Length: 195
Image 1 (cartoon, rainbow, N blue to C red):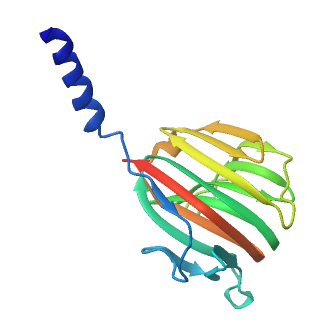
Image 2 (cartoon, helix red, strand yellow):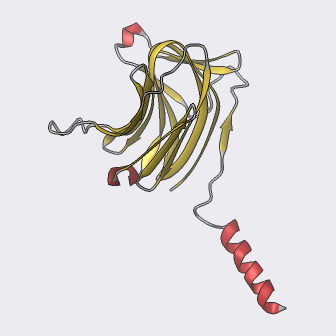
Image 3 (cartoon, rainbow, N blue to C red):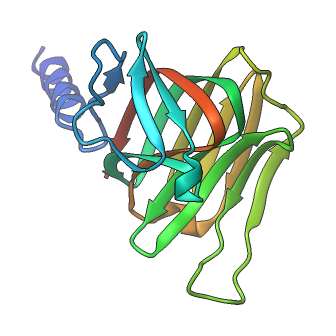
C-alpha cells in the first residue's frame, strides 16, 4: 500500500511544481484601456466595442506595432483577427538582437518566416512555410502560434504551417501585433509561455 501512495505523491509533486507549467493569460477587452504592459510603439491601438482595433498612422511611415510583453522560450498564443481595410497583419517575435521571426497574413497568403538580421547586410528573410490562404475582409478568423524549442506551428483558418530553425529557440521578449494599412480587429487573445 505504501508504494502506490509514494508514486502518487511523486506524480503530484512533479505535476504541481513543474517548471514547464505556465499560467494562461486571457484578454477579452471588456474595458476601454489596453491591458497593463501592452504598448503601442507605432500607430493607434484602442479598444472599441469590446475588441482591440489597430490602425497604421500615415504620419508614422511605419506599420502599427503593439508590443505584448511575455518573456519566454516556448509559448502558445491564440486570437481572432478580422481585416477591416488593412493590407496585412504580422504576428512578430523579437529577441535581444532584434527581429527574430514572424507570421505574415495578407493577400500574398499565410507565411511563416525568419526575419533578416538588420545588423548583417548579407542576412536575408528565410521562408519556413507558406500557404495561399488569404484574409477575407469583415470575417473573423482564429490564429494560433505555438513555439516549442526550435519548432513553430501556426494554425489559421483551417490551415497549418510548420517550420523549425535553431534561432527560434532563443529567449523572446513577447509578441507583437503589426498592422499594415487601415484597421484590423482582434479579440479573444489567450497566451501562455515557459522560460
